[in-house]
Length: 576
Image 1 (cartoon, one colour):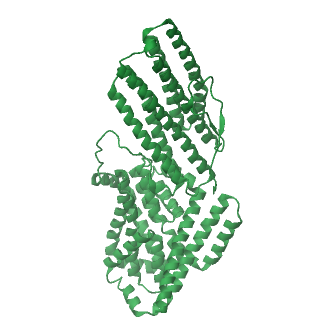
Image 2 (cartoon, rainbow, N blue to C red; image 1 turned 90 degrees about the horizontal axis):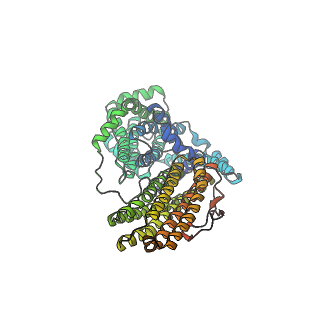
Image 3 (cartoon, helix red, strand yellow; image 1 turned 180 degrees about the horizontal axis):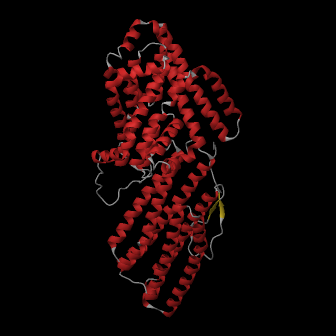
């Protein structure tokens, strides 16, 4: 009984160290290279061979093909990558996950304690975040193999237990049962590398035969694809195709290799007599074989998936949810911030469209257009809340200083966009409603002035929109320089309006308050557009600690001049 207790506790502790070590190692490596990850995945995967290499390297970085596939699901859901691009990456990811098994075969477990000590020293005595990330990766590497060593030492007494040996040896006699059990276990711990490590420990202890180990490897490879399939539920069809592709690659590979297990065993025994290397080589050759078989036909496979999982028909004009954000990628801030950037661009497009459509409401006096505008503002509220909540969750993750300030900058940009929406809904929509219900009209001169100022505002927003999408600092600076022109125009139009009032023009008198409030609303929108361009310049120049923040435009009634810029204070501590 005491022996059983010791074994169970040892296995649980070893498993905990192994999984936590993989987590630390993955997180440390991501911190060192994570900011380049999104660019690499989106730009270097157009060629299927380079996609294969990228998939292998990224999986070595994450220490998990499951994690890589979940990220691919998110990127395709956000339309950053296409299905065809991801197929090569998935095949490469399956190869990358075999590196850990080869390291275990090299008996890296014997140096686990010194590695843990080195990693811990680097973390505690380093002051630079980058050096701490290196230490974290080394510490995770050491803990991973320390956990395997603990499990190996714990299971050693079981070699003499007849019932345990018979149970493991039966895996070779009931291959389908072994595959299913291994697949379920891998899914539960979300790590095929951990399962392979345990299989290798059993093999090195001579507790399972090589055929049994191969069947367990097959199950581990299938089980690792379940997490991605579940993570894709509720995502776009393209994302579901990516997860399904990973599952089908694995299942097809097992079906192709299954009849040839006996010759496969002979090949492995000829390559080496060491059980650990045999298992590691089986895992590696299996995944390389899948890549060789399916890489040449990824284009046809993509078409097959599009037939099996056709696009859904979306009813309704626009779904009230964000287009690009994916909660599953929050743990990878570098990629999550890329999704935020696309969602912010989408929100800016939406606000630009709202602003440009203002003039039609006044021109046609159509209450249906006004109702449509209000629905668009409701959607803007959804986008605003979704983006701010998403950014808040990102900022709870371990971030580099640059990632933190990027998050804050996006917060400021989306806040300005929301203010523009509020001006349109609460002020301009009210002005339009009053004009329609009262049946009044602007004077010809006043209407021409309103259209002129609205045109200038839309042009300013268009330039700001392009600058935001392309990170064009010069264009953003041009917007900042041109915005005071709208301040002068508002003052001039106000003076011209008072002149018409003095002359007693009938239409001018009846719409005086509406006219003045409308041009002032245009001016306040331009102030928020200018704030957005200051953020664009700050991000591009890397000067993210001193944001220019102008007096809130919604508080302006009649500005005497462009409000003086004041530094925007940054909050947030504990940057890593």
